[in-house]
Length: 343
Image (cartoon, rainbow, N blue to C red; front, side, top):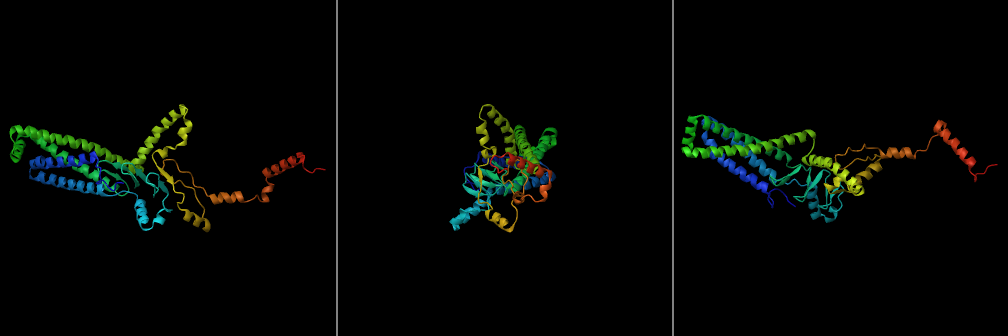
């Protein structure tokens, strides 16, 4: 089980992200920032330094934090101190069939990290870590800072390219500051354009990611819930095709959520609380404990229904037309019964 994104094996996207960040930052600091005049240089240097520092800090924190379900840590700590109490956990509603441990109600098992994550959003390969309740805000701040850094680099590099092409004075100033020849200016211009292209691709993809998470926040959803909803829509057609191929029974026996949620309900969950409510006279309510997209059934008062079933009909009910008709049918049935004592 992985604790954070710094645990091996490292993902290739994680390695590419750190290498690409280092290369672009070095090239931008050496080639682009010294090309500006004094005023513009101070502005872009401050923006670049603050955004790069924020990306490094939030990237490190997001990778280092452990988003595992706190129930796992509590159970591990309890099992080490009191092994007999670790097997009887009544405060956790679900049991993960893969971890074989009690987990919280909103946990999801990550097959890459082999752990259950509290309020799981998605597994980010760029930080090699799961994004959950612990590090989601850090992750969102990270992608915001990445966008600011990318916009700063693109803006500064575009100004340098424009000055190099349109103004001969600015071109000579850049040649003097960087000590470049006429032939090396073409190579310099190509590198700056390459920086703009790379940062533009990153900015477009990262901008879409920011808008997507803002939309998810507006919908009060997680990335995993969105993916699960899309898969359910697709599997509706797949299930219909299976039914047409005479495999209807097999397809209906396995619920769709079981394909993605390897959990079973904890039979001892809130057992003590339920007994306390029964003794004190509080009514029980049936509510779904899963995090599915199905509309939850309306809770109903079991004790109220039981009381209605246990109460016999009153004397006043005998005067109703329905009961009068039933009494006449009973008299007719008794008259036709051969075993009845009729004189």
